[in-house]
Length: 183
Image 1 (cartoon, one colour):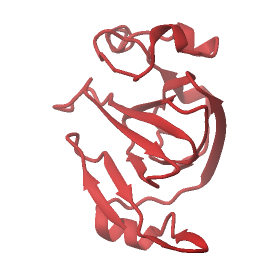
Image 2 (spheres, rainbow, N blue to C red):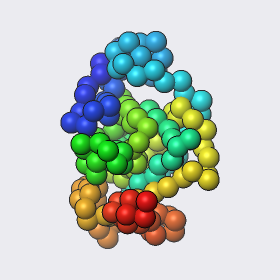
Image 3 (cartoon, rainbow, N blue to C red):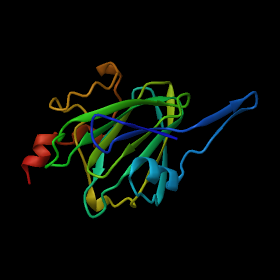
């Protein structure tokens, strides 16, 4: 496993060691001890989730507030997505900045998103099966979200605007400044 640091502290790209031959491939998708040793993060995942989405779907930008804030380790097992983490820690020097990375079944990359970040992804392939681990349980009373198209964030979702497909819920989230001006 290789850990690649990004421009935002704590947000990591994880590249597993893939062993391939004529039969196919094998890789260890997660090893808590090795992850802790190489990343410096002590996480214990308690919930795994999976979604299937078609081309053009944008999910996010979602997060959970304390006391149920979540760290996530995300990956794609079919297709390709652009995965995005937005720093929403008010006192962080990178508040409002984001990191985006392409995850695919072919590159086997994973993306570690620590607590204090909003998360979303766009589907770039015909469809995508997306899996993620969380270190706290889903708690609807603590969920929050930011508008996927917040002009302050200026995220390039790598999709034509007329191709974007959103849930009804994701169409109506506040911008980052609206969300944090209320506090």
